[in-house]
Image (tube, rainbow, N blue to C red; front, side, top):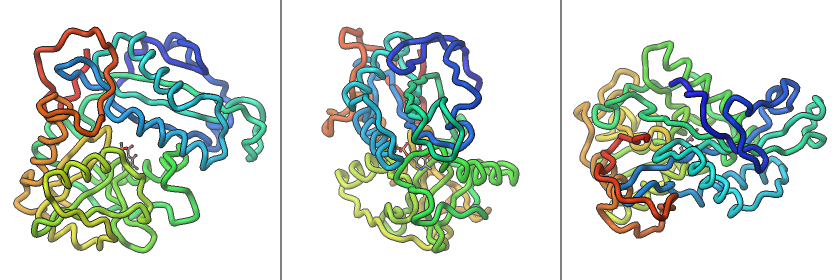
Length: 325
Ligand SMILES: Cc1ncc(COP(=O)(O)O)c(C=O)c1O
């Protein structure tokens, strides 16, 4: 995925050209990972462009900033308005949205307090994260030799740039070994999450997912999937999951804004179920995209429309196909 290098980026309240959205090399965030960020999506729905769970993403962003003692003058509603304004300024029908709050340019001691808290909102076209046909065919995954952050080291509930040093190690190892993604255990040896996704397992009709105490990011897709599965009558168990349940599960799938809902077909070269997308995975994918496609009412109020006056689009979004303009 290469950036187009055009369009507008929101920086501290102003829209600037993509090429001019620069920070100084002595900015604190570059040296010490002192940033917190979000990843959200705007979908081209039949009723017009709509952000999926924008409020939840902004809330998590501000919570991440609070954990890292970053005070920003921007309110939740101000940031949501800034996201919508930036989509409109770029005339996107669909896009990936990346707000970031970071420690900027002032001094380079470890202490971040002297450095300003800056905010930017970047957006671009980002289609299938784990491969073009991954939503149907699934992906091959390995259990990483890297462990997720232990409790009381890096806060996993904060989506901080620093946490992604660990994610990058997991991802690089997986790619170098020929897998699409790595799945990390927590420091106690229980299943935690992928480098950029939460994970669900299905066995004998029961759905399992690690709890927030398993060093996971509390995913907004994870929360949406739990809600949809409960709506459909499934039993969900948020509990510590032993590694070996991956090998004997009927289904395993990842959830995340970038990956959406992606089946896992093998773990450590052991086939999951029959090696194809399972019925629970398919049902929850359908339920998720039914909301986005307006096939069912937006019962949980997850969609924020960007252009109120926009004419309906003819093509609905297919599962796993986040279209751009
Ligand atoms: C480490 C990690 N876990 C889980 C997720 C899924 O979170 P969400 O569904 O909010 O995108 C992400 C996505 O950003 C992630 O980076």
